[in-house]
Length: 424
Image (cartoon, rainbow, N blue to C red; front, side, top):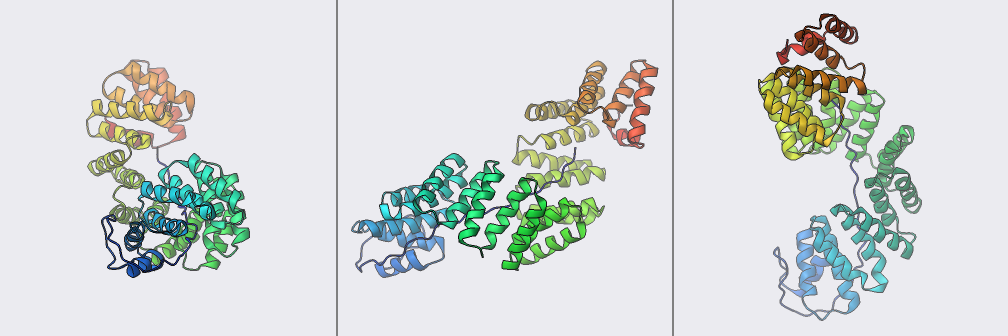
């Protein structure tokens, strides 16, 4: 079974840090490994004025190691260092710093807002929403806190709550393109594509160089089968951000849908160069190789998809069929069994297992699998045809002919599709 994939990226932000002035004075520091300032004055400049996360960490760590900071000063340095840890994806250290900030009453809202975002990135959405709820209660006008809580609700599959939060973020900061972009994503999740399109349009008007908004609008156009506008948006997204792997992946799917397999393969190659762990793109490329009867390459791609996502049922099913073609029926059966463990009662995988069992000569078991698949999808041509072949092998000619005829009525070339399995 082949599926397209749509990735809608969202981004969290930090609540603004409070910049403080520290009295001069020197102190040694045992800060975390990384660049170290040469003086307290340099540390202050790094901690509060440097955009580089590593230098910000070094500067703030130097200041915190002085152990003579007043409470407000310590909270400011911890907030800035926590932000740098968050940018560096060092989530546990970020959470520890933000927890220190929360102890300081006047900055508690910012500490909670940022810790909530760190929890969200760590995958603890419940803790994230709890912190962001408290942050918003303390500062009901914090647009970034609403925005990050919107992302958390989106992560939890609650698009309506996400939209409500993005509405508040937009109310307090109506010219931020990111808020419209992410609300557009949630409108897609809420099955409101027209509103999503309007939000992507607004995001692009506010920021004509917003690569991700073009990508998301391209996905929306593709959802409407407007492939020309989708392609134009993917092209613009990649011109603005030529290292964004998902844009290559989704443009590849568009080329595939148009029958331009060479360009689809080229884009998937590029996507996987940029993101070597992109299991969905391995699966998509494997299907293209399978369609071209390049079975060894298909096998390698499906195997890589499974390597990076052991629970990827669709890739296990695809490798199952590829192994049948390559003469590895017993290993194929194991793949189908594993696929069904992650996605029970999937008719396509039951169909694939039926083909495996027929290849192994287990005709009754094969017929049982085809029966089970047809119970779920009565018009699945592969199962009708496979059951017909199995019945013919068992000598039930009339039932076999009825199944084969029914399959051919649905898909005229089903016999050609079945030929590589070598079961007739």
